[in-house]
Image (cartoon, rainbow, N blue to C red; front, side, top):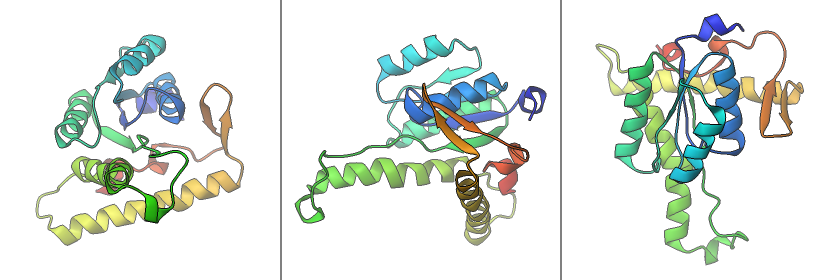
Amino acid sequence: MTVSQHISAVAIITGGSRGFGRAVAAALLERGWTVVTDARRTDDLAATAAELDSARLIPVPGDVTQPAHRTELVVAALDAGPLRLLVNNASLLGPSPQPRLVDYLTADLRAVYDTNVFAPLALIQAAVPVLPGDDEDALAARVLQAEHRIYPQAVQWFLEGRVEFAAGDVVRIRGSGVSSDSLISPRNLQ
């Protein structure tokens, strides 16, 4: 994978101010990608933007559970270039320690599901291109096809030891065959 292959590629990474999201953002920026990222905590996002110090990093503070914020992310990405990658990384653990389901407050459980399930799904739907002549079935089929490609690939890389979680929130994917075609993107959903 060369930097020139990704000069105009754009990624959206939710929850990019720390941990895995920050590590992926840093790795993509090093490879020449433009990265649109968000975080609920504006100060954390500003600190990450200052540390990564890249003109190709577009921080968009906000809460991924809010429809207007998801729209902001997609618009910022499309304004920057072709959207090639979406990393739904933002998450909410909920109460700690985790209560038994029977004891889980409905409002807490709803917040966890809104952040971890419904918001990522809504962002995927917002980022998937709608082509001329598309109907609901054709669009759903493209999304399903992409899901069936990416999940087995990610599991295979992990089992082969090609995915490494290193110190300093660094994630490495080693080996040949790692390219933009290996990643889920609106481009390869068409």
